[in-house]
Amino acid sequence: MNSRKLVLDAAKKLYAEKLVAGTSGNISIRNVDGGDDSYLITASGLSYDIMTEEDIVEIDEEGNSKVEGQKPSSEWKMHIEVYKKYPEVNAIVHTHSSIATGFAVNHQDIPLILIEMKPFLGGDVKVAPFRPAGSEELAQVILPYLEDRTACLLANHGVISVGKTMEDAFVAAEYVEDAAKIYYYAKTSGVPVILD
Image (cartoon, rainbow, N blue to C red; front, side, top):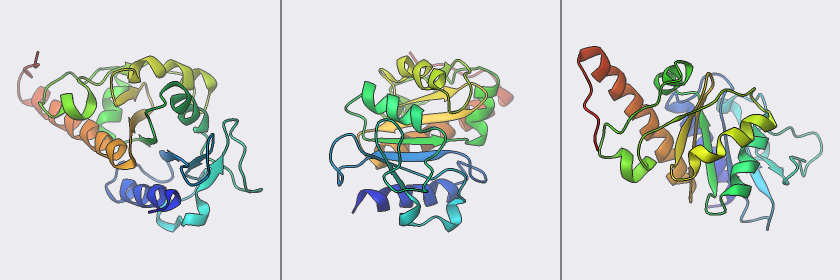
C-alpha cells in the first residue's frame, strides 16, 4: 500500500471512530515512496469525509509543500520535530479524542491502570505542558514525553501518538482513549488501583 493511501485510510478511520470532530487532529507518515526528508500529512482545514489521496500533502522538513497551493496541517512542526528526534518513528496520529482530552484539559496524567498500557503505550500517559497549537514551542515541549512512550496528552489540546508503523501509531491512539475512558469510569465508581 502506498504512503498516501495509508494516511488517507487512517484519517478516515480516525473520523469514523470519533477520535476527532470536524477538521481537528491530523495524521502523518514518513514518505518511504519519496525518499529522505519527505513526509505526508493531512491537509489543513479539510473535512475527513471528503478527503482524497490527492489531498494528502507532501512536505519537506521546513514544512514546504511539494505541490503549490496545498496547505499542510497547521501542526506540521510538531510532526517534523518528532520525526527528527526519533528516527524509529515513522507515523504520527494526533487526536482530540473526548475523554483523553478531558484529562488533558485538567492537566491530569492517566496512570498505569491496565496491563495493555505497558506494551502498547509504554506505561502511563503524561500531560505535556500547554503551548499554542502549531507553535515551535509545542513541537519542542512534547519531545521528552515521547522518549519512552508512544503517546502523551497535550495540555488543553488533545493527544499525540507515535509508532514504527501507521498501525502502531493508530493503535496507540485508540488505547489512550480506551484507558482514559476506563480511568474516568473507575474514578466515578470508586478509587482506581494503580499497577506497579
